Structure formats: structure tokens, C-alpha cells
Image (cartoon, rainbow over all chains, first blue to last red; front, side, top):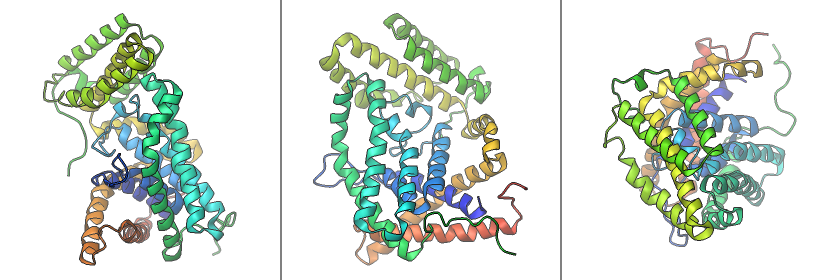
Length: 191
Length: 203
């Protein structure tokens, strides 16, 4: 990893934390307030690519586990993990990785609908796949009940996926970071 | 802006090494998930409260408890009682209460920097996968430095877009924020390289 990559990892971990400091957005149509942090996860994935995004979220986890109140609403510390929503939070790491991997693969023909599909798959599919069983175990609920309960958050997450997709496509024009698949990192730089 | 949940007191619990406390928490969590009969849970709850007393943490540090009860434990108790019987409900809620109290105790009695150091030590075996302790240290300190700065930028960009009437347009806030972050990343990387930081392992 180059220094630039390390800095990207650190800055996106900080970005996810900074987005958690924003007041939750209340939309009139949706009953649950939207926090911007999962948006940060999606943005990291679709801007940095699989490896760096996964590392950025791991770094963020490390800081939260160390007791910094970086999650939306000032939550933090190891208490987050045994809690009912711990799995959704743990799911951010594979989610960022999956979004990154898919975005890298689709980089050449990335369009808003495609990026939206990728962000829904990673940002909703992967996060919920980790979060719902965790919620069921932590709260002792049957799996189906846990799944129904989280349906409430799907509309908000779809809004975030749409935002992340549109940001990713705009950013691809403004400041492209990823390269075409498989062409990344030549074995040795020319003198 | 201050970060961290740590509350300073002089007690044996505060003086205990961070790694030991975190390992203890891990052990307690696993044990409670395996054995969760009501007598065990009640004993664990009493022991946890005893540890709070030992750490000389008072009601002010326990101010999060009513919030926890009202927003997490009570709804969970009712939901579970209705779905799967009041016996299971009591057990699940007690277990969750003990776990959260214990984890909070670790965060309250251990400095974030000590916990980061303990984690860094625990992650040292990862060195063979290319995660060197020096690089990890750089990452952690960069992130800690940039959280308040990024929060300021979010605010600045919003203010700037408010002047243009775009404050409720999320994309108009996100794109400048991301570009600014990435541009700073480049400048920062150059500055770090200029100071001869070894980003890559020697061949």
C-alpha cells in the first residue's frame, strides 16, 4: 500500500465518524430518522474500492471498540457489540468490501442505476444479512420477527443508496480513484 | 471537541491493564451467552454493580441506565414477553443489561489511548499479513485528528451551499465534501512521503 492509500483509509474512517455527528435527517414519508453513517459506508465502498474501504471500516471499528463514542447518537465502546444493533454495525465491514468489489468490477460502465443496485446489494443486503441474525440472537427473537422489525429501515436505506450511487457517478467524473478492473498496480514502477 | 467515555478515578479497576479488562469482558460475554439461568444472571448483575462501586463510579456515570431501560430493555421485554413468554423475556433482558453494563464499565475505566494500544498489541500477529504496527499507529492518529476536522468541513460546505439555496440538496453537500477530502488526502500523502515515512515494507 502506498502512503496515499493509507491516508485514504484513515480519512474515510474519519468521514464515517464525522457523518455520525450530523443530526439525523427526518424525512416526512419515513417513520424512522435517517442517520448518515451507512451513507458513509456506501460512499467508502464506491469511492475507494474493496480493499481500502474494508480497511477503513475495520479502522473505524477499532476506534469504536476502544471506547470512542463515534456512532450516531454518541454511542461507542464495547457495549455496542452485545447490543441488539451490534450486527448491523459489524456488517458495515463486509458491506463496504462488497460494494467496493462490485464497483471496481463495474467501473467502466458505472451508471446511476447500476451503482444504485450495487449499493442496495451491499448496503442493505449484506448489512441486513449480518444484522438480522445478530438481532435475533441478542434479543432472543425468532428470526422472522427480527426481519420484519428491520423492514422499517429499508426505505431510508434505499434513499441513502440512491444518494451514494449518484455521488459515486458524479465523483467518477470529478475525481476518479479506481482504475479499470485487473489493471491496478503495476508490479514495479518505472525508474 | 473531546472524544472518549473515560472517567478518571483512582481505583484498582482503573489501574488494571487495558488488555486484561478487555479479555475479561470477552470471557464474561461468552460465559453469559452459554450459561444464562436466572440465578447466574442475578449474581452477575450484582457482581457488575459491585465492580462499579469498586471503580468508584457513582450515579452520575450510571446516567445512561434509565435511557437504556426506556429505549432498549423495556420495549424488548414487552416484545419478547408477548412473543415467547415472560420467562425468556426476563432472561434475555437481564443478560443484555449485564453485558451492556460490563462493556460500559470497561469503557468508563480505560482510556481510549490505552485501549488502542492494547488492540495494537493484540493485532501484532497481523504483521505477517502486511499490517505493520507503525502503519497502524499512523492510521489511528490520522483518523483521530481528522474526525473533528471533517466535522468542521461538513458544517462549512453546508453553510456555503445554504448561501446558494442548496442546503437541502444532499448531493450538493456530498460531492464538495468528498472532493475536498480526496484532495486533502493527496496533499497529506505528499507531506508524509516528504518526511520519509516508509509506507511499504522493505523488500
